[in-house]
Image (cartoon, rainbow, N blue to C red; front, side):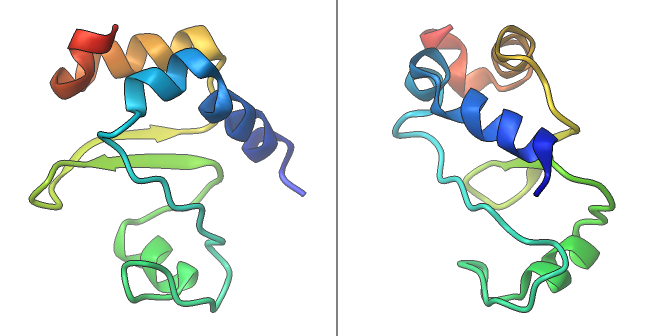
Length: 96
């Protein structure tokens, strides 16, 4: 599999990160080459094309109106990921 994806899976399971994201975030793991229908009603391949995802892992955060607010391509260490969340996603600042 994808070692960088596994690294991000671990980061997303960290209790500190989970507390920042908890109740504010729905996380969907998508196979960008797959044909499985996702929660968005598109296949992973279709979503990758729609959002121009070319590499994995790629995390994309959307606001409640489905507008993209931040895109994080590649894997980040826990501390770096937390810093990105706290700096760029105002809804989460209270948990930082």
